[in-house]
Length: 408
Image (cartoon, rainbow, N blue to C red; front, side):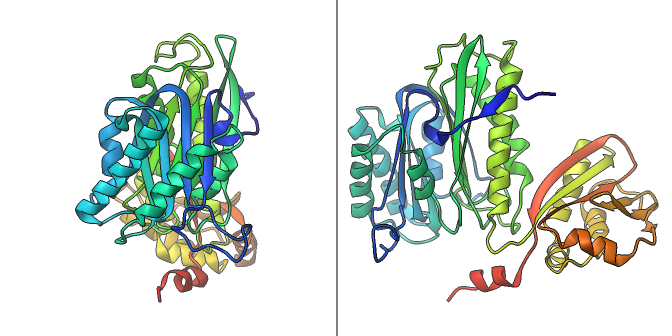
């Protein structure tokens, strides 16, 4: 079926009425030249008040900016997002809360909006106070250069261990009006959403009710960010925010609107592409793996099994070496909590049938190894118990990842 949307340039500022900026304010060390100096503060602004929705980390140790943004988003309205990289402002006590509030307050003052209309996000090292003089100077500098060309800089400014900036935009028709959805994201390590050290900021010029926007965001997150894993760690700072300013002028979208499914489909696409980009950019990874569970007794069981396989350290190590050790995959399925009959399990590497009825098919190891040495492949397990299915997206685990994360 032909998609009801198309990809366009522009990222976070593709939608009407959104401007953005990215600056270096000194949270990260400066480079030897301006070109080598990393950006570390982003500002995203809607020219009109916007409906807003968000999902945040499920970790009970929540960073100060998450707690501030959770409070602000409760009103369902926002006009700006201010985000920094290089410092998570997590586990920083009362000072951390004050710093997050001050980021919102200064942004609100510069934009002439209420503080609760500013959402805050931070990412980077945990347990270190923000250099607030630098941060506040950065907010002032970013406000001065806001533009509809600033989305790419904002995408770079939220990167930490990412190798690549992540942005996307699409356009679709709602009531014969052109509607745009744009997004930027970051994330490479500490990735096991629900959610993880990742951001995704989304903008749209669609007119959408707050209730509808919240439901659409949660549905899209469930089929994207809540299906990815790099290292089975859930961060303190994960934040996904969507702003809808209504400047497209369409008839307001509700759950009953005939074009609501088109909007949901486009949002699903945008967020899935950003989620997959995070996995592909995982810290020191060499492979992208689709983990498909089919034939489960329920979708919930399929999710349990897929997540167990996607997070199995033994499976990820085998994938790193191109080792077709499918026993590690079936082991993870068995302890996942899903209903399993070991005599009914089928396993496939791409289209190669490696296990049938819980026993090896006799497929030569060299053929399986050829699949597992590719940069992307699919591991599918059919439980043969029902219609439940779920797909997760994960990576291999490399020696370089351990070296990168072992600390000083």
